[in-house]
Image (spheres, rainbow, N blue to C red):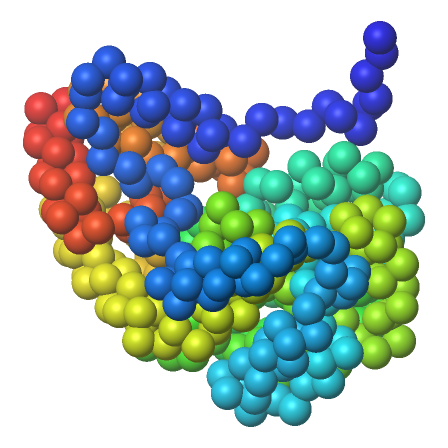
Length: 380
Protein backbone atom coordinates (compact mmCIF):
# COMPACT_ATOMS: atom_id res chain seq x y z
CA UNK A 1 0.00 0.00 0.00
CA UNK A 2 1.36 3.42 -0.94
CA UNK A 3 2.01 6.21 1.52
CA UNK A 4 1.47 9.89 0.90
CA UNK A 5 4.27 12.28 0.11
CA UNK A 6 2.98 14.40 3.00
CA UNK A 7 3.83 11.60 5.42
CA UNK A 8 7.53 11.88 4.57
CA UNK A 9 8.40 13.93 7.64
CA UNK A 10 11.64 13.79 9.58
CA UNK A 11 11.89 11.86 12.85
CA UNK A 12 11.89 13.77 16.14
CA UNK A 13 15.47 13.05 17.19
CA UNK A 14 14.90 13.76 20.88
CA UNK A 15 12.46 10.84 20.93
CA UNK A 16 15.25 8.62 19.59
CA UNK A 17 17.48 9.90 22.41
CA UNK A 18 14.75 9.11 24.93
CA UNK A 19 14.50 5.57 23.55
CA UNK A 20 18.27 5.07 23.78
CA UNK A 21 18.15 6.32 27.37
CA UNK A 22 15.29 3.93 28.14
CA UNK A 23 17.26 0.99 26.76
CA UNK A 24 20.25 1.99 28.90
CA UNK A 25 18.04 2.17 31.99
CA UNK A 26 16.55 -1.24 31.24
CA UNK A 27 20.11 -2.56 31.19
CA UNK A 28 20.55 -1.28 34.74
CA UNK A 29 22.24 2.09 34.15
CA UNK A 30 21.27 5.29 35.96
CA UNK A 31 20.62 7.99 33.37
CA UNK A 32 20.32 11.70 34.05
CA UNK A 33 17.68 13.13 31.73
CA UNK A 34 18.59 16.48 30.20
CA UNK A 35 17.10 15.64 26.80
CA UNK A 36 13.36 16.04 27.16
CA UNK A 37 11.38 19.23 27.65
CA UNK A 38 9.13 17.82 30.32
CA UNK A 39 8.69 18.99 33.90
CA UNK A 40 9.90 16.50 36.49
CA UNK A 41 6.73 17.22 38.48
CA UNK A 42 3.24 15.92 37.87
CA UNK A 43 -0.06 17.74 37.64
CA UNK A 44 -0.96 19.91 40.65
CA UNK A 45 -2.69 18.04 43.43
CA UNK A 46 -5.78 20.23 43.05
CA UNK A 47 -6.11 19.01 39.47
CA UNK A 48 -5.99 15.38 40.53
CA UNK A 49 -8.55 15.93 43.29
CA UNK A 50 -10.89 17.75 40.91
CA UNK A 51 -10.74 14.93 38.38
CA UNK A 52 -11.30 12.28 41.07
CA UNK A 53 -14.44 14.11 42.20
CA UNK A 54 -15.67 14.55 38.62
CA UNK A 55 -15.21 10.87 37.83
CA UNK A 56 -17.19 9.91 40.91
CA UNK A 57 -20.06 12.11 39.79
CA UNK A 58 -20.59 10.37 36.47
CA UNK A 59 -19.20 9.64 33.01
CA UNK A 60 -17.09 12.24 31.28
CA UNK A 61 -18.44 12.42 27.75
CA UNK A 62 -17.85 14.83 24.91
CA UNK A 63 -17.72 18.52 25.68
CA UNK A 64 -18.61 21.15 23.11
CA UNK A 65 -15.87 21.51 20.50
CA UNK A 66 -14.52 24.81 21.85
CA UNK A 67 -14.11 23.40 25.36
CA UNK A 68 -15.76 23.70 28.76
CA UNK A 69 -17.19 27.23 29.13
CA UNK A 70 -15.79 27.48 32.67
CA UNK A 71 -12.29 26.66 31.45
CA UNK A 72 -12.52 29.17 28.58
CA UNK A 73 -13.61 31.84 31.05
CA UNK A 74 -10.76 30.95 33.42
CA UNK A 75 -8.22 31.22 30.59
CA UNK A 76 -9.61 34.67 29.80
CA UNK A 77 -9.12 35.59 33.46
CA UNK A 78 -5.48 34.51 33.19
CA UNK A 79 -4.98 37.13 30.49
CA UNK A 80 -6.34 39.77 32.86
CA UNK A 81 -4.13 38.56 35.69
CA UNK A 82 -0.89 38.08 33.71
CA UNK A 83 -1.10 40.67 30.94
CA UNK A 84 -3.84 43.15 31.93
CA UNK A 85 -5.81 42.15 28.82
CA UNK A 86 -9.63 42.14 28.78
CA UNK A 87 -10.16 39.02 26.68
CA UNK A 88 -13.54 37.81 25.46
CA UNK A 89 -13.79 34.11 26.50
CA UNK A 90 -15.52 33.42 23.18
CA UNK A 91 -12.11 33.84 21.50
CA UNK A 92 -10.59 31.00 23.57
CA UNK A 93 -10.44 27.54 22.02
CA UNK A 94 -9.50 24.58 24.23
CA UNK A 95 -7.30 22.22 22.21
CA UNK A 96 -5.75 18.76 22.41
CA UNK A 97 -2.43 20.15 23.57
CA UNK A 98 -0.52 22.87 21.76
CA UNK A 99 -0.03 20.37 18.93
CA UNK A 100 -3.79 20.31 18.34
CA UNK A 101 -3.70 24.10 18.34
CA UNK A 102 -1.06 24.18 15.61
CA UNK A 103 -3.08 21.79 13.46
CA UNK A 104 -6.19 23.92 13.84
CA UNK A 105 -4.32 27.16 13.25
CA UNK A 106 -2.50 25.95 10.15
CA UNK A 107 -5.72 24.58 8.66
CA UNK A 108 -7.64 27.76 9.44
CA UNK A 109 -5.05 30.15 8.04
CA UNK A 110 -3.27 28.47 5.13
CA UNK A 111 -3.92 26.68 1.86
CA UNK A 112 -1.85 23.83 0.42
CA UNK A 113 1.48 25.09 -0.85
CA UNK A 114 1.51 28.22 1.31
CA UNK A 115 4.89 29.21 2.75
CA UNK A 116 5.18 29.72 6.52
CA UNK A 117 8.26 31.22 8.14
CA UNK A 118 9.71 29.70 11.31
CA UNK A 119 12.84 30.76 13.16
CA UNK A 120 15.80 28.39 13.17
CA UNK A 121 16.65 27.06 15.65
CA UNK A 122 13.06 26.30 16.54
CA UNK A 123 10.72 23.58 17.73
CA UNK A 124 11.01 20.81 15.11
CA UNK A 125 7.36 19.78 15.04
CA UNK A 126 6.41 23.15 13.52
CA UNK A 127 8.27 22.10 10.41
CA UNK A 128 6.91 18.57 10.31
CA UNK A 129 3.27 19.50 10.96
CA UNK A 130 3.46 22.07 8.17
CA UNK A 131 4.92 19.46 5.83
CA UNK A 132 2.27 16.94 6.81
CA UNK A 133 -0.45 19.43 5.90
CA UNK A 134 1.01 20.11 2.48
CA UNK A 135 2.45 23.48 3.49
CA UNK A 136 5.99 24.73 2.99
CA UNK A 137 8.03 25.52 6.11
CA UNK A 138 10.59 28.24 5.46
CA UNK A 139 13.47 28.20 7.94
CA UNK A 140 14.64 31.68 8.89
CA UNK A 141 18.22 31.30 10.18
CA UNK A 142 18.47 33.54 13.23
CA UNK A 143 21.58 35.24 14.54
CA UNK A 144 23.19 35.03 17.98
CA UNK A 145 23.32 38.84 17.76
CA UNK A 146 19.50 38.76 17.88
CA UNK A 147 19.55 36.11 20.61
CA UNK A 148 18.37 33.47 18.12
CA UNK A 149 15.04 35.23 17.53
CA UNK A 150 13.84 36.33 14.07
CA UNK A 151 13.80 39.98 13.05
CA UNK A 152 11.89 41.54 10.12
CA UNK A 153 14.98 41.51 7.88
CA UNK A 154 15.07 37.71 8.15
CA UNK A 155 11.88 37.32 6.12
CA UNK A 156 11.88 40.36 3.87
CA UNK A 157 11.03 39.32 0.29
CA UNK A 158 10.35 35.72 1.39
CA UNK A 159 6.76 35.69 0.07
CA UNK A 160 5.32 34.20 3.26
CA UNK A 161 1.67 33.46 4.00
CA UNK A 162 2.46 33.27 7.70
CA UNK A 163 5.06 33.79 10.40
CA UNK A 164 5.32 31.66 13.55
CA UNK A 165 7.38 32.85 16.51
CA UNK A 166 7.99 31.48 20.01
CA UNK A 167 8.86 33.48 23.11
CA UNK A 168 10.28 32.05 25.32
CA UNK A 169 11.71 29.90 22.56
CA UNK A 170 12.59 26.24 22.37
CA UNK A 171 15.55 25.46 22.30
CA UNK A 172 17.13 28.78 23.27
CA UNK A 173 14.87 30.05 26.05
CA UNK A 174 15.24 33.59 24.71
CA UNK A 175 12.32 36.04 24.63
CA UNK A 176 11.04 38.85 22.45
CA UNK A 177 10.40 42.15 24.23
CA UNK A 178 7.45 44.34 23.25
CA UNK A 179 9.47 46.33 20.72
CA UNK A 180 10.83 43.22 18.98
CA UNK A 181 7.47 41.43 19.02
CA UNK A 182 5.70 44.50 17.70
CA UNK A 183 8.18 44.89 14.86
CA UNK A 184 7.58 41.29 13.77
CA UNK A 185 3.79 41.63 13.94
CA UNK A 186 3.87 44.87 11.94
CA UNK A 187 6.23 43.44 9.32
CA UNK A 188 4.23 40.24 8.93
CA UNK A 189 0.89 42.02 8.66
CA UNK A 190 2.40 44.60 6.31
CA UNK A 191 3.41 41.75 4.02
CA UNK A 192 -0.05 40.16 4.22
CA UNK A 193 1.20 37.27 6.38
CA UNK A 194 -0.76 35.77 9.30
CA UNK A 195 1.01 35.94 12.67
CA UNK A 196 1.08 33.01 15.12
CA UNK A 197 2.67 33.30 18.57
CA UNK A 198 3.66 30.14 20.44
CA UNK A 199 3.48 31.10 24.12
CA UNK A 200 3.67 27.62 25.62
CA UNK A 201 6.48 28.57 28.04
CA UNK A 202 4.77 31.65 29.44
CA UNK A 203 4.82 31.53 33.21
CA UNK A 204 8.36 30.13 33.18
CA UNK A 205 10.34 33.37 33.14
CA UNK A 206 13.14 34.45 35.42
CA UNK A 207 13.76 38.18 35.33
CA UNK A 208 11.16 39.76 33.04
CA UNK A 209 7.56 38.76 32.32
CA UNK A 210 7.03 37.51 28.78
CA UNK A 211 5.06 39.71 26.39
CA UNK A 212 2.01 38.18 24.76
CA UNK A 213 1.28 38.99 21.13
CA UNK A 214 -2.19 39.89 22.40
CA UNK A 215 -0.64 42.83 24.25
CA UNK A 216 0.09 44.31 20.82
CA UNK A 217 -2.62 43.13 18.42
CA UNK A 218 -5.95 41.31 18.33
CA UNK A 219 -5.31 40.20 14.76
CA UNK A 220 -3.05 37.28 15.74
CA UNK A 221 -3.28 33.65 16.78
CA UNK A 222 -1.83 32.76 20.19
CA UNK A 223 -1.21 29.15 21.17
CA UNK A 224 -0.51 27.92 24.70
CA UNK A 225 -0.70 24.73 26.71
CA UNK A 226 -1.01 23.28 30.18
CA UNK A 227 2.08 21.14 29.53
CA UNK A 228 4.88 23.35 30.82
CA UNK A 229 4.07 25.90 33.54
CA UNK A 230 1.06 23.85 34.65
CA UNK A 231 3.11 20.61 34.54
CA UNK A 232 0.53 18.56 32.62
CA UNK A 233 2.40 17.20 29.58
CA UNK A 234 0.65 13.84 29.28
CA UNK A 235 -2.83 15.26 29.76
CA UNK A 236 -2.81 16.73 26.22
CA UNK A 237 -4.76 19.90 26.82
CA UNK A 238 -3.98 23.42 25.68
CA UNK A 239 -5.67 26.52 24.34
CA UNK A 240 -5.66 28.97 21.47
CA UNK A 241 -6.84 32.58 21.23
CA UNK A 242 -8.05 33.68 17.81
CA UNK A 243 -9.54 36.90 16.36
CA UNK A 244 -13.28 37.20 16.85
CA UNK A 245 -14.02 36.81 13.14
CA UNK A 246 -12.11 33.50 13.12
CA UNK A 247 -13.98 31.86 16.00
CA UNK A 248 -16.56 30.08 13.86
CA UNK A 249 -13.89 29.03 11.33
CA UNK A 250 -11.86 27.31 14.03
CA UNK A 251 -14.96 25.87 15.70
CA UNK A 252 -16.01 24.08 12.49
CA UNK A 253 -12.51 22.63 12.12
CA UNK A 254 -12.37 21.55 15.77
CA UNK A 255 -15.76 19.84 15.55
CA UNK A 256 -14.59 17.69 12.67
CA UNK A 257 -10.93 17.10 13.52
CA UNK A 258 -11.03 16.52 17.26
CA UNK A 259 -14.69 16.67 18.42
CA UNK A 260 -13.24 18.12 21.64
CA UNK A 261 -10.18 18.10 23.86
CA UNK A 262 -10.24 15.30 26.48
CA UNK A 263 -12.99 16.08 28.99
CA UNK A 264 -11.02 14.66 31.92
CA UNK A 265 -8.02 16.83 31.08
CA UNK A 266 -10.19 19.92 30.84
CA UNK A 267 -11.57 19.30 34.34
CA UNK A 268 -8.06 18.90 35.71
CA UNK A 269 -6.77 21.94 33.84
CA UNK A 270 -9.46 24.18 35.31
CA UNK A 271 -8.39 23.25 38.83
CA UNK A 272 -4.69 23.50 37.98
CA UNK A 273 -5.09 27.17 37.11
CA UNK A 274 -5.74 27.99 40.77
CA UNK A 275 -2.80 25.96 42.14
CA UNK A 276 -0.53 29.01 42.28
CA UNK A 277 1.52 27.97 45.31
CA UNK A 278 2.45 24.59 43.86
CA UNK A 279 3.19 26.02 40.42
CA UNK A 280 5.37 28.81 41.76
CA UNK A 281 7.28 26.24 43.83
CA UNK A 282 8.02 24.40 40.57
CA UNK A 283 9.22 27.68 39.05
CA UNK A 284 11.58 28.19 41.98
CA UNK A 285 13.16 24.81 41.20
CA UNK A 286 13.66 25.79 37.55
CA UNK A 287 15.26 29.06 38.65
CA UNK A 288 17.68 27.23 40.94
CA UNK A 289 18.47 24.73 38.19
CA UNK A 290 19.05 27.54 35.69
CA UNK A 291 21.62 29.14 37.99
CA UNK A 292 23.39 25.80 38.36
CA UNK A 293 23.45 25.27 34.59
CA UNK A 294 24.76 28.74 33.80
CA UNK A 295 27.60 28.18 36.24
CA UNK A 296 28.22 24.48 35.66
CA UNK A 297 28.06 24.12 31.88
CA UNK A 298 30.95 26.56 31.19
CA UNK A 299 33.01 24.86 33.89
CA UNK A 300 32.33 21.53 32.21
CA UNK A 301 33.54 22.86 28.85
CA UNK A 302 30.30 24.07 27.26
CA UNK A 303 31.10 27.76 27.41
CA UNK A 304 29.34 29.11 24.31
CA UNK A 305 25.84 29.57 25.69
CA UNK A 306 23.33 32.41 25.91
CA UNK A 307 21.52 32.81 29.24
CA UNK A 308 17.86 31.81 28.74
CA UNK A 309 15.17 34.33 29.68
CA UNK A 310 12.55 31.63 30.17
CA UNK A 311 11.59 27.99 29.56
CA UNK A 312 14.03 25.39 30.94
CA UNK A 313 16.71 24.92 28.28
CA UNK A 314 20.25 25.97 27.54
CA UNK A 315 21.31 25.88 23.89
CA UNK A 316 25.06 25.45 23.51
CA UNK A 317 27.35 26.00 20.53
CA UNK A 318 29.68 22.99 20.49
CA UNK A 319 31.42 23.78 17.21
CA UNK A 320 34.72 23.97 19.09
CA UNK A 321 34.20 20.41 20.32
CA UNK A 322 32.60 18.57 17.41
CA UNK A 323 31.04 18.88 13.98
CA UNK A 324 28.64 16.01 14.72
CA UNK A 325 26.32 16.84 17.60
CA UNK A 326 24.40 13.60 17.21
CA UNK A 327 27.56 11.54 17.68
CA UNK A 328 28.58 13.71 20.63
CA UNK A 329 25.17 13.25 22.28
CA UNK A 330 25.46 9.48 21.82
CA UNK A 331 28.95 9.54 23.35
CA UNK A 332 27.76 11.57 26.34
CA UNK A 333 24.93 9.12 26.93
CA UNK A 334 27.22 6.10 26.60
CA UNK A 335 30.15 7.35 28.67
CA UNK A 336 28.60 9.83 31.08
CA UNK A 337 25.08 8.48 31.46
CA UNK A 338 23.56 11.88 30.61
CA UNK A 339 20.93 12.18 27.88
CA UNK A 340 21.11 15.46 25.90
CA UNK A 341 19.56 16.51 22.59
CA UNK A 342 21.56 17.20 19.41
CA UNK A 343 20.67 20.46 17.75
CA UNK A 344 19.69 18.84 14.45
CA UNK A 345 16.13 18.64 15.72
CA UNK A 346 15.95 22.41 15.92
CA UNK A 347 18.14 23.56 13.04
CA UNK A 348 18.73 21.11 10.17
CA UNK A 349 21.49 23.29 8.70
CA UNK A 350 23.48 24.39 11.74
CA UNK A 351 22.31 21.93 14.37
CA UNK A 352 25.26 19.59 13.86
CA UNK A 353 27.21 22.08 15.96
CA UNK A 354 24.79 22.56 18.85
CA UNK A 355 23.32 20.71 21.83
CA UNK A 356 20.24 21.45 23.93
CA UNK A 357 20.34 20.81 27.67
CA UNK A 358 17.07 20.68 29.60
CA UNK A 359 17.00 21.52 33.31
CA UNK A 360 13.36 20.67 34.01
CA UNK A 361 14.11 17.81 36.40
CA UNK A 362 14.95 17.69 40.11
CA UNK A 363 17.81 19.88 41.30
CA UNK A 364 19.61 16.78 42.57
CA UNK A 365 19.61 15.41 39.03
CA UNK A 366 20.98 18.66 37.63
CA UNK A 367 23.84 18.65 40.14
CA UNK A 368 24.67 15.04 39.33
CA UNK A 369 24.38 15.62 35.58
CA UNK A 370 26.72 18.59 35.63
CA UNK A 371 29.26 16.60 37.63
CA UNK A 372 29.11 13.77 35.10
CA UNK A 373 29.45 16.17 32.18
CA UNK A 374 32.50 17.81 33.75
CA UNK A 375 34.19 14.43 34.30
CA UNK A 376 33.32 13.33 30.76
CA UNK A 377 34.78 16.45 29.17
CA UNK A 378 37.90 16.30 31.34
CA UNK A 379 38.57 12.73 30.22
CA UNK A 380 37.71 13.26 26.56
